Image 1 (cartoon, rainbow, N blue to C red):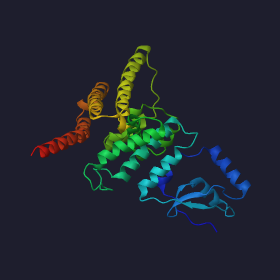
Image 2: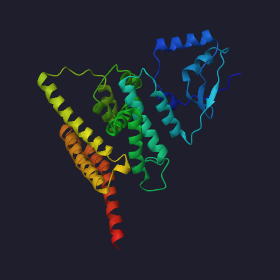
Image 3: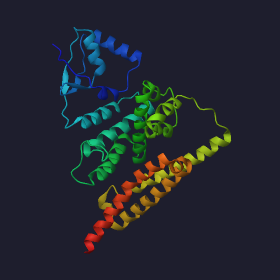
Length: 310
């Protein structure tokens, strides 16, 4: 007799849906075999992989299935595993891949220490979330053959997709399937918008932009190339520090200096291309809030230096 399993909506939402043809083919294969060949992956009787197979088995009582139990310390570890597992699929769209990378990063940040702004899982060490975030980005970038800056942008993209789905159900699948391809920054902006503006911004993601003139395209390409150069330089500055045996304090300082300069340059690029970040009070407040993290880190370093001198 098949066990009764639980479908967690958040877990299932991380799994890109099958197309109608793919779902029909899966059902035909299961009916032909007379059972579900691949075991359903579960955690405390909650499905983490195999939602479609479970529903097919429920629709056909004679179809049996097996389960394989996974152990996780909390639901964030389960969410991270789901995203990693789904990233192994071959037929993902670029948007689905970006979304899953962003969701994996978000889950692992919470699993490793939580969000300082939330009341959820917290680190017992004040600065552990800072360290964990960098290490987490580096690991995900390595696993997915991307970069740390890509992981950070994927995180913002995923938050925007989720915010849009909350106010406009169904748009998530439209975006991740590639039906609509708005700019990444426009998607991320939905999460930052006020509750009153969020639906309007989400609806704008479905608007197909007008074709740009040749001059506009050249200007956009120039701006994009500059941003890519900045991101590439930031990523490169970390490369020399991965092998501690080859790095001296002097070379580490050089990398740190480049990182600090590139942070300033990245901000200049963003503020130039998106002047509203500083001109609109709501966005400016968020910019200042974001910059509190590096500010507090510097204050912490200065405090440690003062303590050493006394």
